[in-house]
Image 1 (tube, helix red, strand yellow):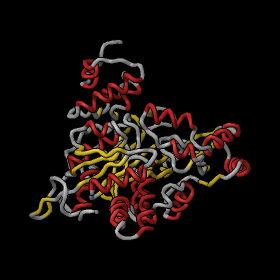
Image 2 (cartoon, one colour):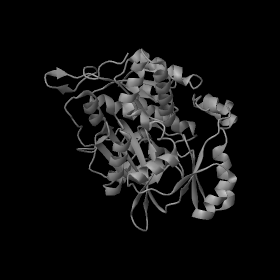
Image 3 (spheres, helix red, strand yellow):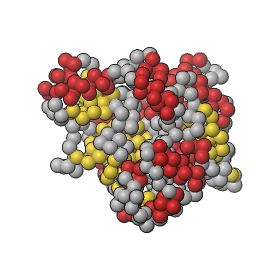
Image 4 (cartoon, helix red, strand yellow):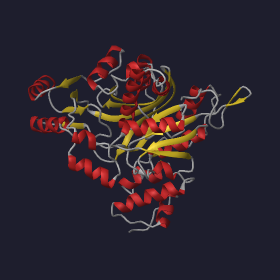
Length: 431
């Protein structure tokens, strides 16, 4: 089932041998989330043959680098992921969203329970993500915060909230504002900041409740994303945690790690966001000792492999960085190659194959990165499109056109000429 990780895929050399490896990009996210496609481009550039399991019509299939795609079905997620693994015979699986990670964890548990010959798939998942002992803790927010604290990582107080009474006790002890977070959620969907008791109560009930069927059906119809249908139909309720509010600036890291060692890392301060609880659209590259230390300690403690993201709050009063979340997957910055020790895809190829490390040339010397197409979709007149580095994938015109269609679906029509002028640093004429 799983081929030896030493001799597959394109490019990359170790000794006299060409090293080949296939990576399977796994995502359940809608087609309008373009970060998986950008990561696929970086993986191909690093030396991997790239295949993908994703919803039909996903932007991954629009790139020139993805050799084959396998359809993901939200109604049979484990079956579709397993079928993709069997068909692609990858050397590595890289998930790009939280549901993809959860399904890989479930497949691992199922295959281990079955025993041989199913062990091959379980070994592939362990090879890709790290020690399976970490699988139970990465999505349990309170348990993970406790583990991080044991490692000497600075974290806000976090506690599981099981009832309205427990919520009131949490507020009485810790005060307001407070942060409420649901386990096994992502992209800001499972996070609420409550500034009074009424807001906290409403947030608690909303986070604990199963996904609304109407919302699940809408996503299935319009985004071709059936992920929420089963949780909605089964009335799955979420575990909710309280987390102490840290006043400050958001920051984020993404690392490549292998068997517990950090090999490459990117640390950013968040400059702009899609909305208050949404993903970042503009980032500033930084060096931060707290963030570096936290990633190294957690990677070692959990014996992680692959790509893992970390979120922080940098406290205004002290400038201390507080770790607030682990994302056990690639995030939207995984494609950025920003110099020595900052090329995540190259580090992953080298670590997983034994090939000599060949990092890409640094994309830019500008520390401010306007993510494509996120910042332009947020505000086409944003000053960051000119003052920062706007990471447009000029070599993938089909991907750019897909972004144009995404904007048009929002009722904001813009011509291709205006896109070209805007992305070339020339502000388009008034519309």
